Length: 210
Image 1 (cartoon, rainbow, N blue to C red):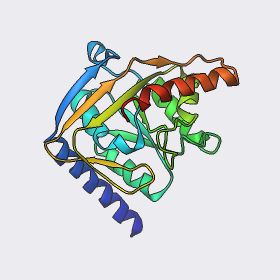
Image 2: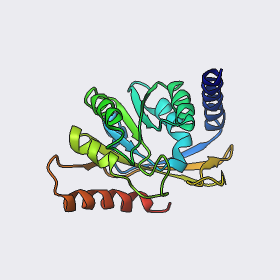
Image 3: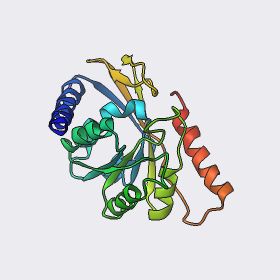
Image 4: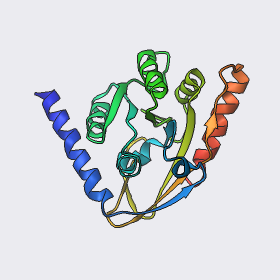
C-alpha cells in the first residue's frame, strides 16, 4: 500500500507542475545555443531547490528528446522519479554525492547519455550541502564524453520551504528566468587536481545569482 501511495503522490506532483507551469512567464537566455541546435545535447545541471520547473520546461521545449534523471533511493526520490516519469523521464536511483555507492545508477546514466538522451542531475543533491557540486556529475561527463549544460533558474516570486536545500516553489503567474550557460566538456583523463578544477568551475558558474 505504501508504494501505491507514493506513486499516486508522484502523479499529483506532476499535475501540480503542469498546473503552475502553465501560468508562468519564461524569460530565456540561451548562452549555450541549445535552441540553435534544436536540443540541449547532454547533461543538464541544476540546483536541487530549483528542480520544480525542469520537467515542464524539457517537455515544453524538447519533447522530441527522451530524458533521464538521477534520483535518490529514498522515498522522496521515488516521488521525484514518479513525477518525472509523467514527463517522459526514466529514473536512475542513486546519489550524485556518493558515486562509489551509486555505481549502478552512474552506469545507467552513462548508457542514457550515449543513447542521446538528455540527463538531468541536481549536483548538490540528494542531501547537500546546498549549492555545493558533488563529484558524480563530473565523473559522468568524464566517463561518457557528454556535455554538461549548466541551467540556472531564477524565480521572481516563490515560496521557500524550510528544507536542507530551501526548496523553492514558484508562485503562479510569476516570471521565471532560465539561463542556459555555455556548455562544459570534461576530458577523460584528469589528475585529482584537474578534476577538482572542473568541479569548482561548474560550481562557480551555477552559484551566480543563486
